[in-house]
Length: 460
Image (tube, rainbow, N blue to C red; front, side, top):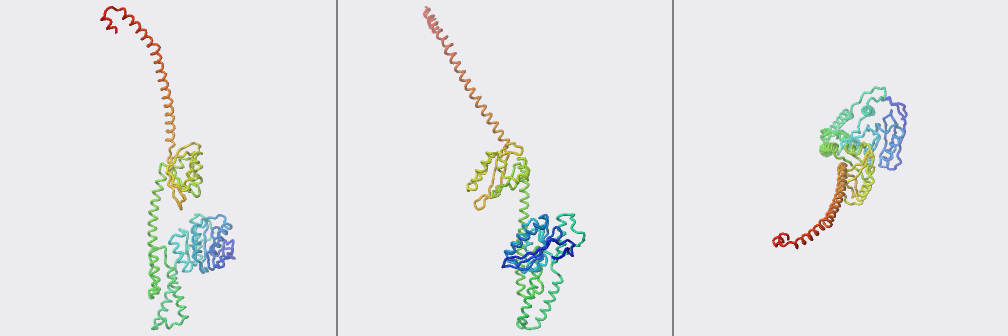
């Protein structure tokens, strides 16, 4: 805290601050420094209640915002040696914070007590931290790993002139295991010299052995690598005592169940990934447009390349828009009506036709086929397939024009026919009819002048 430079890495130490919680149920405190440009180092003390954890995480947020020039690409390192514990709510907060955090590219913890090491290993096994969580044993290992991760995140970065060899990966100390085994071998030899050694021990010795045995047992459990399938064999000290062996067997069962679940989860994720890949290929190469709409944010959240081609907008631009911005006035009114019906719980027809306006100002037509998903009877998201029917609409308009022309031609034809009929009626009545009448009169006069009866019959 008081140094100007890290003695191990040579990086400058700046912005030393201390956090102390105000929650009466916890006594969580922490010292914080900025190491170099991209590393935040924290030394925590005490017990973390849920309220204290909330204060602490808010303090981290404020520290990053104030002390780091860019709120991304930061490595978080924390020393757990003096953490005495924490309630379950605080641990959930801690995991959730570092899982969803955007400005930390990795978190490294060291000096973990055995129980915490078990907890963090299990969290890593379940992918709660993704690939950003790391456990090491010492500060030097934490710094070396941080430098390696930063180099991978930003290749060619010039952190320091000092050359530091990467430390070995963290893991249980072999020497600690040997000392523990020798210690318990000695204890067993002493106890085997008595016919009923446990009854002859004083309460003080019992307590000491129980504490010592518990510590060794916890270390043995904490040494389990929860990220690797299978269970290592129990230590000899566990095999010689029935009760610890039962505990160890129980934990072995839990681990085997976790391994099985993780295998099933991995297999399901692979199937899901293949399905997702096929789905994306189908969507991307489809001739129809595709769009996902979020009712809560009133935004387009996903589009394919075909929709971008149809509208003339880039995919990035479409993801900042809501559908109304693409529609004509009539289309906006129809969209608002359908939206009101969806929120009122009415069942919507899957198909609808909208007129939209392209980026260049041209009009187009699409037929939408929407599949709406609901949560608590309220619409959440909609997957929409858009079929461009601009050509069909143009053909429809042309057909309507042709129909109108045909109608007008039909009327004109009818009028011409009627005019012709009237003309022909007039000719028949005024010309041919009169001539026939005169002819009949002349024939009648001619008949009267005939004297031969045979000629009169032919004339009739």
